Length: 126
Image (cartoon, rainbow, N blue to C red; front, side, top):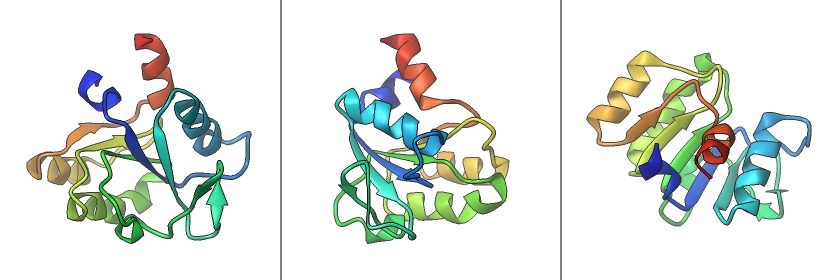
């Protein structure tokens, strides 16, 4: 986890414009801590003051961590795309896990955390 927390560019799949949702307040917290947040949500142009991208492949620069706020049944294509763009790490938030996808990500060399909160782990180590 320490290696992932040291990475600074985080694509947030399922980033939300709604302040009450974890997909908003977790990346907002990380942004305040100095991380570059790259929202991924096809339904919005900007979130948290950052340009929003429809998918990971649309991001024109390297991504360190793919942080996922999606239901588990929608996660495998996101994981496959994270591998395709050569992300360094995959972080599946609380309640999100996909054993097959996680194995693929590890096999491709990504660091993987599942069913855990990036905000909580950052605060725990701060």
